[in-house]
Image (cartoon, rainbow, N blue to C red; front, top):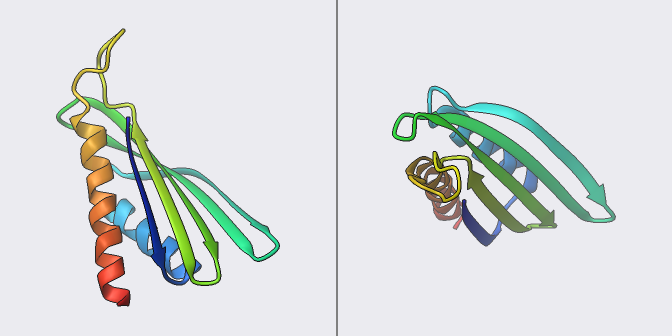
Length: 115
């Protein structure tokens, strides 16, 4: 399991669409599995779950992305998992790390675009 969290400024819908596009087009095997959208007063939250095939691990890995927003303040948390072949210990987590790194790069690019 790998985890990434970031606070940033931006438009909630625009950011959500941006990362969805980046994840889905980042790998030929990427797929959207399910999601949730909710609003409480002025705060919005969206959770997205993606999967992709990891050639290195020979298995599928998942990426759970949660975006919390109020006005132009955004918080994103992403957790990847499923890249291990070990029965009792995690072995070879390269696939889940790579999935998360691609999202990290996309978020950093978004921040640079909105400055």
